[in-house]
Image 1: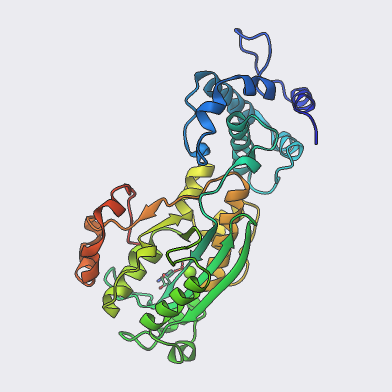
Image 2: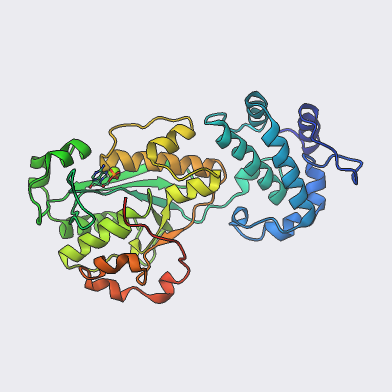
Length: 354
Ligand code: AMP
Ligand code: MG
């Protein structure tokens, strides 16, 4: 492993950021300087440090100076710098620039050469869910979407790997016959839902599967649920629980909204799965709008986020009081039972219309 001094020299050799008039030495890449600031005590006492803004003035100045340098780099220079740090050179230029900036912020935070290794994730497992539901080409806002595919893709966070999956179709009861539009969109065929259990049984099976892996029970492993946007839980699951007259599951009250996290972490517009993958230099694996394939691809994005130093936390949830849920509240009597203190940290807007 290269020493801190070697790294400093090599890094300074290739990039020469504008010098501050107050400083005789350029500290931008100087790990010794970083270690001697009060950045570490400020920033390293929590496992989610990278979520917090850097409050130390000196570090803040270093960081914005470095960010300016990165903004002026050409694509090839960005790749050179990424390679020196053994970081991925995949993805669009904005993503690669952000990768470099996050790495430097982590260096300031931890004062070491491999700062991403110091980042502690909050969850041991992340379970990605992407429901498919009945639909039609001319459906209005009040279309009674029933869940017809329930997949779970399990990520082992430490291994940064998909380690398990659950998948079941569900038989709809309000509109038991799938529209051609729905079959074409999702690839789900009539015989697959005809031979499937109804949603309450599938939910029980999914919870049994999760319990067998100690992901729900009281001595549970730390597991967070993740979806692409708010719709899977806030719209489809809420609606379905109302139709089936069953309690809304506790585990789905808060979740990791991957689309939202992706947009804030890489400072890009919110976009769908294919576009997120494309930004990362990846292509969609499988069939779009297949619940299982969508879940696998959301999991791939989630893994890339973690590799780039993003700490994944619950960032979205059900807000019982949200006026956007009024029409859904009328179909789900359980929603009144949502605990206020479980929702009060949730100032995120949950949008129902897709
Ligand atoms: P997705 O996860 O994007 O595959 O979408 C989940 C569900 O949203 C689908 O199973 C459909 O019920 C509904 N949906 C998605 N896209 C459309 C669309 N273009 N038109 C109608 N419904 C859609
Ligand atoms: Mg889907």
